[in-house]
Image 1 (cartoon, rainbow, N blue to C red):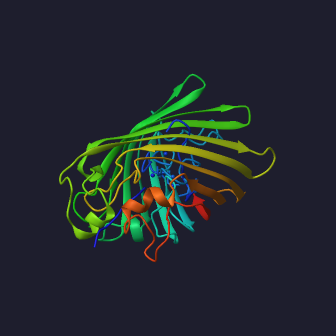
Image 2 (image 1 turned 135 degrees about the vertical axis):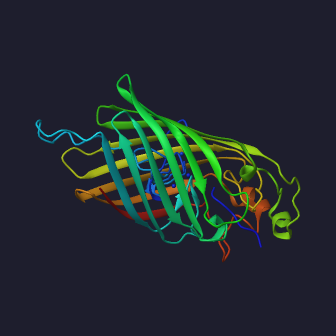
Image 3 (image 1 turned 90 degrees about the horizontal axis):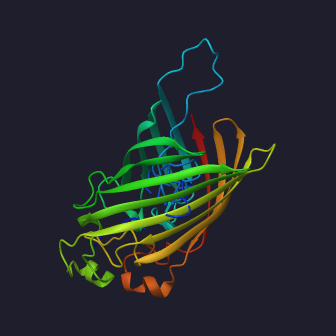
Length: 327
């Protein structure tokens, strides 16, 4: 029996043009990495916009102090924000991490007025996305956001953890995201890079080798690159925002030490189109169409890994629904 792993979104967090994340984080920071489609996700990725947190990266974006507070009320140097999401599928960079089933996710971010922030984001896992143990993903994020011209540059690191899971599962990923507005459009370009690490190694060349427990290259270390771009259009005088995401993964074209790979077929694109509706403050209803260019033929050499437990693809087109409560 072999465990498998992510392939950074569902409807909470996804990353944007140029590059996904936990993690940058993670999607919610979602991500990915993977709209709150969790990437999401999701938060993404780590410290991304709410959009980026949907289907690939998962962290929660830092939130500026409330500008509406009275002038005579001193603003706090520290801001705490968080969210909880129920999504129909946790998609990280286009690939399901929950066997195309429900996921419950949550995160919290502590931000300082200087631009520095730390956070954590978590989700349940199932099927190909698990490493055993608690079947949970926990992303730890630290970053720094600062103004650049008319936009904002957000840089940091995400540590992807799988509590009580198999050996050699955790890995770190660096991320940078540049965001800004052009008229009614909010644009984000992101890059996430995971340096050579054993958790990302091309240990098994085929799913058959992983299932047999016969590594082709034990101890191998590989890196991973994710480029993403996101566009959000808020419809004036409505609680509706339209979203689009494009991501590109380049990494291990095989299976890692636990029969997994963050970029299972080596290189591939993921994309999504969706919408958010916020009927009241702190509540967001989301829907997203998510797909990748990974074909059945391309992923066949990874079987019996990289598939649903009952058989079938986990990187095919799907519609993900989610509801997010935030503070």
